[in-house]
Length: 112
Image (tube, rainbow, N blue to C red; front, side, top):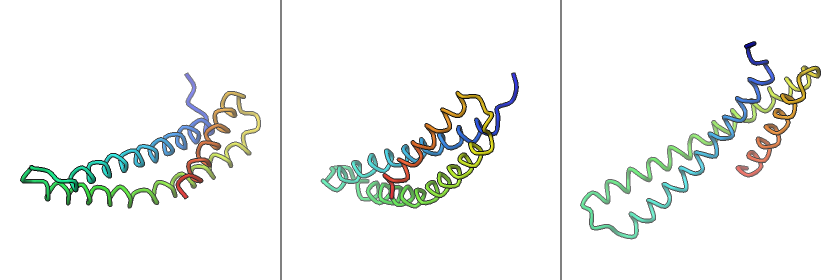
């Protein structure tokens, strides 16, 4: 089996980064839900500690997002360059690359 082309590698990299960003947003929502639950009151003696930990985790997640967005932008640029330079690439790879580009642009618009 031949190694994947540079276009395929760039496509899969971009797809992975978009999924990674989506998972961070999902994690953020879950953390916010847990924080609200803890703030509503808990009988647990460790509630204050757990609330502090959840808030710290939420801040760390928020701090990671700009880095992921930068990586997505860089991977998007790289993929667009690969797409331009690989005009003779198989149609399937080109289609996947274009789909990945659209998803990445949509993700960047949503997170802006």
